[in-house]
Image (cartoon, rainbow, N blue to C red):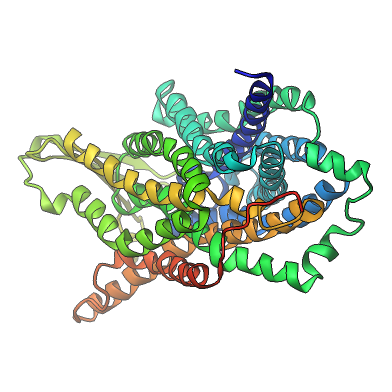
Length: 520
């Protein structure tokens, strides 16, 4: 291998490792959403706590465009390298601090406030990281291999999620469920500081982007990157086109295929945490190489067609795929065997109460195909008999047989394949839209609005839509009326389908996608 290629390989590796760690730091929060809901929010309403956690998770996405503006401006003024060194340290510090925050039981409302503040800092950091890394790599890459080399940066988001799930699974297996729920969940946050420090040492030895260094030496850098990016009508038109014709649709496809899929397995299908994470990890492992494949393919046949094909397939196939996932995990479709001897009842007195008690009934259901469902029902019996006992809280946990598990792996893999098509070529696509002196600012904003706002809000909006559908049906059922909404578990998919559909149409009509010159 030539020295040039060795240098390029080092540049890609150093940039990718740092970006991967930032994604790990950012997504460890989402991967632990169900646990964090019980730690940082009131536990009297689990659904509201989970929605609040998703909203806090989404807040980190919403603030990303502001990070893009702030750090994008710095990147166009002082350079790509130093800017994403700062974002790395900011992200690492915020993630480490989340692992130190006391629970809601300890400090009350201060806990969710602190989590929100740190989540916002994470969003600001990521808003500056991606644009810097993508621009840095693209400005080092040969013109006919830009899609291939920048696609390595695209893999970091998925690999970061993969690593976060892996660290969580390893941590879970090292201790009991009670220990993990008590304090073990903090470890994935705390260990990230080691990875951040190693990445900082690697990045410190990197040189500045040659195109930016040349522009700076010639006095051609922008004095006001934000004004030139968004005050210039022609450039602003390209910013809007990049947003509505590409990143908006790509963003919802990305978060549906990875985050909403995970939430759907856990919350809608009630799969066991370890099995759901295992399904996601296998699907991610199988799907990740396709970022590189589609990135390289975009060098040969163009970026536009591949990205729009990913959006179109998502719009067409989301409902059938998620329906198949739901029905594969649905125990109503399975034949149950005798469970009478696997029921356990435990009665505990409630603290600070003489007669109130919590009755926990655990029933294990076995099915002919090897699926197992554990059903835990908690009922609070009140001492004051004039007051009715509280409504039972029922939690179901399903562990699928091997065949059904691998069916879900393949279905989630299909979702991730759409992600790789829409996401793999997009870094090269965005870099090629804007001139060197304002590239960092111009490409970062549409990317982070598309991914941070439209994509990042996807899990919260989809969960809200599905929850509303279930509540409407429950109300209708209580009144003796037929269900008002068919398949309420699929209602959340209307959001990504509509957004990706709009982006597909705009991109198909208005994006040219043939200009690959980045030398202004």
